[in-house]
Length: 91
Length: 403
Image (cartoon, rainbow over all chains, first blue to last red; front, top):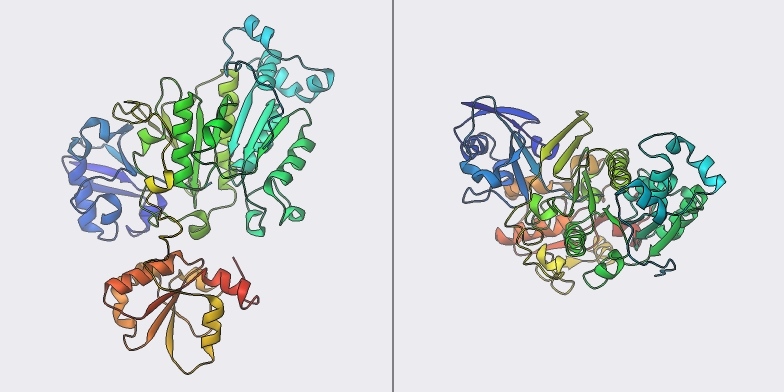
């Protein structure tokens, strides 16, 4: 199972500058764990030390917020897209 | 604070039916008919829509990067009453993106400058200015007089404050936020829709997400995002089109890609879901920001004047710059060495243990974090330059450029 993960520029710089990455996994959490292992600098920006999602980084599976759909346990299918949206405050 | 315009029952922000709206909305004089002619010949706006705009009131929280295009376009569009909340003066570094102001305004209050510019752009607009920081104590009082609120602030505490106040009052909150090359926009706190807390339940810890002053922002980006907010505000007033209610728009200026994601009300949201949040809270504390007394207590600091007086003395110390290489290229202190904050952890062996370590950055935030990291790693003599290279330029050596 492979999904595409979209990173905002602020996180992409911690993943060799890549804005879109393909990663394997059966759930959103497994995909995130794969990326965290691949890019150690990115890891603490994606989830906390115990592997749980933060309240200020929102994960979308296709167009839906995963928190309302099982969180990191939400199952993914081949070709799905995960979009990571961190809180920003500039104005 | 002035509130000169009387306000009875609020006019509905959306047109319900044409005849009813026409009865409540103010008429247009001949000058206005000519001024708004490109609106009037749009069937989606027309005379009724323009009168709805004239009857509407919109509060802009923040008159900076987002507030600039918002103020200009909403005044130009003929929104009848515009409120502005800000407490800042115009700084030279604002002019790269805050198009409401000119070089002649540097040093003036933003609100006085905005009033001049907007009343020249459209004298039909009633402007109300609130020269204050929006707080839990004044937010409901200020916001309750408006049909719509637009969030153009630059920090997490005020964003949660604006959100919660809008939810409590039932006033739509047109949201926009920017960082570097990217932006977000949505419409929160409508009767059925989600709110800011449904998107981000809690703010990031202080220091994790740099501000635009620390991280930079492309000058045209607030133009792009502010104009999207202005468009949403005008649509809500007109009751036209598909609003961003229930959708999050992501704007990527570098890739020039726009994506919309679905945003649902979180049933567990304390503001708009369970509604357990019945009053405004301490938003600085909610965002983990230490109070003035607490700040600085955990890390020893040195003032620029004190550091300057030590430069000529024999007692040696290591001066370390923890900014980014591109900032080092703009300006630096003599005798300093560059070790960016992100790399401090892996370069601990480059810091001397037999000398005092003086750390500096642009404004003092990053050097305090680096100092904390060194102290936790067992270094004993570590100080952070209070106010950073910016205050060094102000207090010691103006030949060092501020940026």
